[in-house]
Image (cartoon, rainbow, N blue to C red; front, side, top):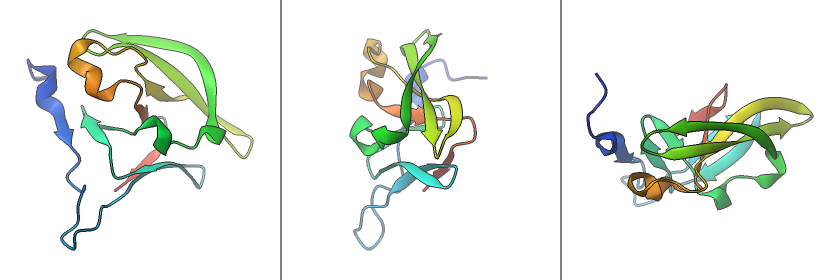
Length: 118
């Protein structure tokens, strides 16, 4: 059963610092390329949300796709374009998140075959 409080599933990423004090990086990889890399991801409902500045804009194409989440708001999507191969609507973000999701506003998450390495 899903949590009654959506924020109950919001977790800081556990590998923000290694035992030696180094920050550990989380990567989003598709088609053999690192699409995003950051030590500052936010995990919500099992998805890593990367800061926009940590995502390589060369791989992003705007998409017309939008979906709605009752507690996060309207999601917009990007299609990934890596070496001429497209992964339609494989990245999403909330340009104007609802109040309970402001901490992920304009951060980018991935799916559809994008591997998250941490």
